[in-house]
Length: 124
Image (cartoon, rainbow, N blue to C red; front, side):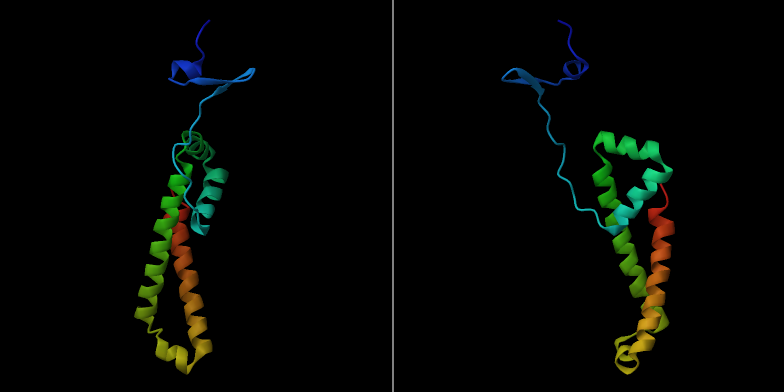
């Protein structure tokens, strides 16, 4: 009997009753994917399908998305801190005028999100 492609590549089977089942193992544990990784996955799936499915079938998609998520998160918080320091958005402003502090922080947060989207999420 000729070997299947699975056997030719080193795969083995186990007999379970009347069935012959392939011995499959997971390559790595799934890492949690945050919002940035989910946005990048959506972008890849919509605009770079071949890369998305290559990563998916090779088992590297989860690790790739986790790495993108971690990078984006670090850049996002670093940008917020830098922008707030540069623009003088401090705890004193928060204590003195909360609405002004919220307005400025929302503005900083939105700008930081746009930077992360264009520099990390929507690129290859």
